[in-house]
Length: 98
Image (spheres, rainbow, N blue to C red):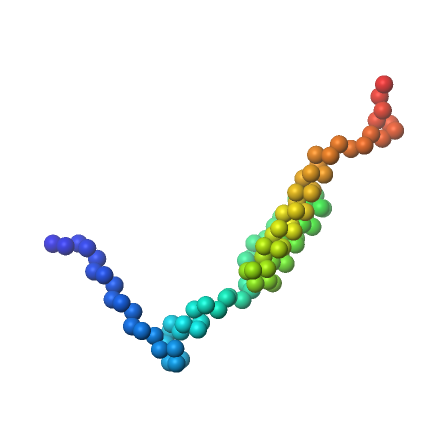
């Protein structure tokens, strides 16, 4: 007894001129249009971070090749926000202690 699954049948050649043919070569390489990912963000309580995260929604209206530009810009902004948290505040007049 042989439990091996039989090999699938080879696909019949497609006819690009036949509109009823489900696989048309000219359609196979067209890029998909922009579609929202539907990923939401929650407010962080830090206005600078929230503003950068809100910009991610701009990618929903762009084709995929436009996403990296938005992601890189948001990434730069978030890094700048994190860097600013590490910066030492300048001492105010009432902070001087001797």
